Length: 159
Image (cartoon, rainbow, N blue to C red):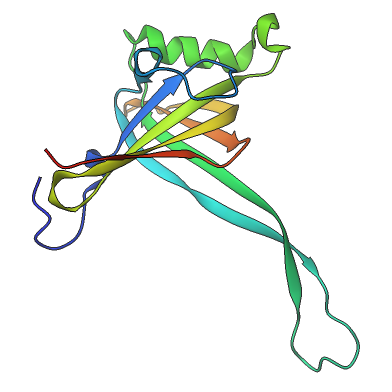
């Protein structure tokens, strides 16, 4: 993978999911790649509390309170993908072994310069899975996840 322009294309990012509620990341074999993904949006966002007081003029002040790591994935819905259907079922009817919560781990592989990379493993609650079936277009899905903790980051050296 060439990085002459110091940019990466989205297709270089891989998304895998393990339907697991453990407190540590599952082993590699428990993750399954989520095929046919198109868009991935993720990253931290802080909530804040307004701390503006009288006498501060026209400037609002605030303090950060809670950090949210949201992950949004869009892709093609594949009729023959049993894994996509199992993720959808996991959100629709979370197993009683997970106290009825749609917990999972999402692994995002990010490429780095020189063939190196890193994975970010997020413990998440799978919060939504929606399909869009246009009359004259492919069926797509949108999935949203809310991270329950900071990701476990693992560096992958260049070959």
